[in-house]
Image 1 (spheres, one colour):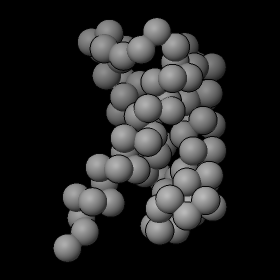
Image 2 (cartoon, one colour):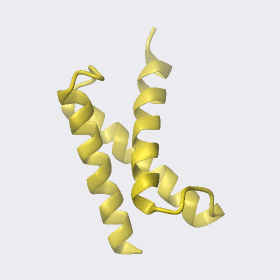
Image 3 (cartoon, rainbow, N blue to C red):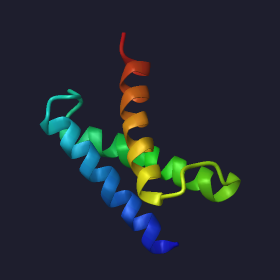
Length: 78
């Protein structure tokens, strides 16, 4: 379980970094990584508590990171 959590953090950080470097987001590298890691943590704990998610923990990390990058910046944009 601990290794799954660490893998989730690493995958989320890579997604945040890659999304910023490719120009998909314009939040800043650190901010995108924080958004992705936060979304991945949230989805990880929801999966543990309620069993909602995909079969693969890696797929959960990817989908939750991308979802957080889509939801969070647009929510605060004016």
